[in-house]
Image 1 (cartoon, rainbow, N blue to C red):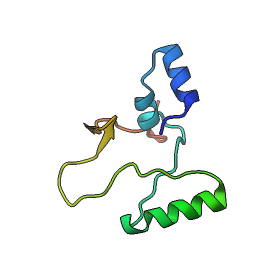
Image 2 (cartoon, rainbow, N blue to C red):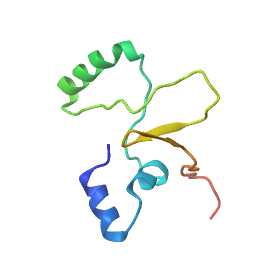
Image 3 (cartoon, rainbow, N blue to C red):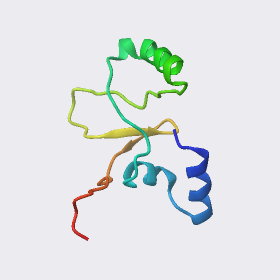
Length: 89
């Protein structure tokens, strides 16, 4: 999910909020994997213990399609390079 703050600043400066969230280099959200059959239990426990939500953003498949994600229900190929903290400037 994109925060309202990210959406607002992106709109103000004509930035792509999704691109920033994926490639920006800042810690936006923690990503992790969990067995799909355990997601609902983990989600409820997480909410109860930490008072915040976790979101299912995808799934791991046994195929050669690379990294893809959904944006408003439409499949997108991940073409970004991400952020490299060690890349020489």
